Length: 334
Image (cartoon, rainbow, N blue to C red):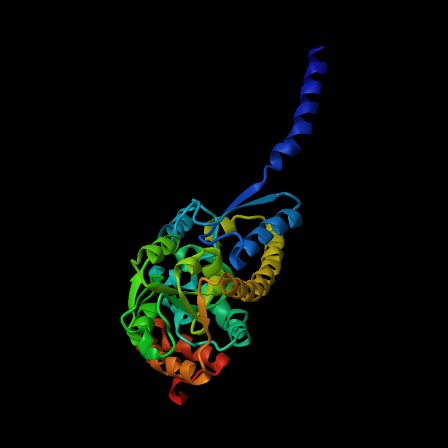
């Protein structure tokens, strides 16, 4: 009887063991923007595909809109292992000592998505992501948000119209220099605090891709939007290196495929959602939209061009020359 009970117990344990062994690997993916943005949609897509491709072995939990951490907190949380995955804007890597990423903040460094993707999806982008490894971070991909426009409560047609405006920026020495080049007073502020700051007049305006402007309802408290495409806002999808290195090889392979697919989703949605957001801002009637003439845009480009030289020693001449080689940018020809 005892032997029968032991055999029965052994059978039960062997039957339940595979279930216990299949406890999913949880990846907490934190970000600071709305779910209905290029980054938000791509994060959800990645979570879905990660589950499918690993047959449930990986569960990605997505936390949008600063639910877990704000701009200034999330990178430390990643390094400590409190979250496993982030997609911070590229300027967030400079405070870690990887200043090469600030090249993406330079004004007018990319004229279009083709130039941009030659960098982010090529050897230059791969080399930049590799620089995060010593910081305990593994870079997986670059995701687009889009090109930025200026918004404020006064018209901005000519370079002199920007003088004296208080504008919110991300924490970035390059963005600070960009703003000062046209007489703007830059104000560093967390993304989650911008709407209230615009509403109360703490700042006069800001710069954003149209999808961020619309989903955060900033157009409701901004009377003017000038479509300048003067700068790029993008993200690097990163994971905690120790966590990533500890994953099984087959899980790695599946997650790499999910990330490749999610990157296409992110970049396709970036274009689509920014176009749709601009149309919605226009339809709201709350914000007057202005598109600069070619001469006005060139004047803005010339006014900001010296920032490239100013930041060369900070970002690194080698990195800038590698990017210029891909894009054809030449400040001396402006």
